[in-house]
View (cartoon, rainbow, N blue to C red):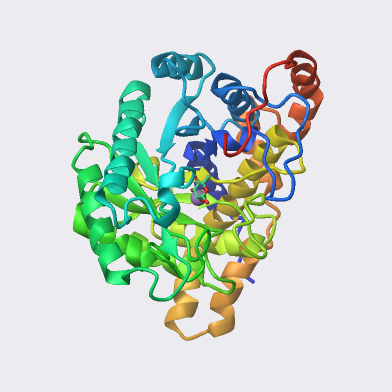
Length: 394
Ligand code: RM4
Ligand code: MN
């Protein structure tokens, strides 16, 4: 058995964990559900300002979630400068700006790939609006998930759609300021079922390579077929220097958007192991570790706290891998020894290490319990009366 807990390795892990940050999605703080039912919850945010207040609570107790992704138009406000200032007052900042190409009647047959130029131009102009929001908020990441696709073979020309997509993306990319990035997401099915126009990392990467260095791939862990080896994709995108961000969540059947690490903690560990092995945990590595989740039945702020701590636990375990023993076992063909170097680290209880990390930052060792004790959930349930609760999709 390798010993993942040597003092040197623990110290190095603590230093790396102290710098790790995880970005929260604004939509996690609104009500959400399935197409069957959206359950409202007491105290849910009613506007983008309140969503940011909730995100700031997650940061307050974890010390590791200092940015919030926004979604346009769900988070449209009159004055984005004011929203960014509100975030800064609460100790957080605005992260990626997500565009929306899936909620307009014009987009029935596609947006950036649509056969009609008028519709493509409208979808491109929406990104101009998003880039303006980035300028007003100091955001550097424009995140684009393309919901386009077709339902029936022959419905449209597959290659023609790729050509139109390449042209539309180029027009968006050309508007980026230096220092801004385009994060291009992929998803293998849904909302269309025959062919999605960006179904996989290869298609996303090809478009990014054609666009230029400011374009990188977003890997949403929920957007793969069952059994896909996601850590292989992580490794390959890191090799190509094009892993721009994660959308972390868990899936069982589809795009389930459950709490990251809840369905398969070993998979999350394997993903973080590739990140650590490639030294991509560093804050300047260019990988933005974001959550893309919804909390349909569980409370939202505690759900986000649990998500952050799950990512931290997987990261801590990856940092404890005995890399010398691993390399030696790999080199000598010791199959079980090499595998054991990973499983030993995975089996380590890292909660004491994370408690030490939090205490060193002046935080409570258990963010989940500390939030529960704080009375915040009861306070917002009392105070946030009237108005309309924010909801996924609105
Ligand atoms: C999509 C995709 C995007 C997210 C939206 C809300 O399925 O995962 O990342 O912005 O949902
Ligand atoms: Mn996503």
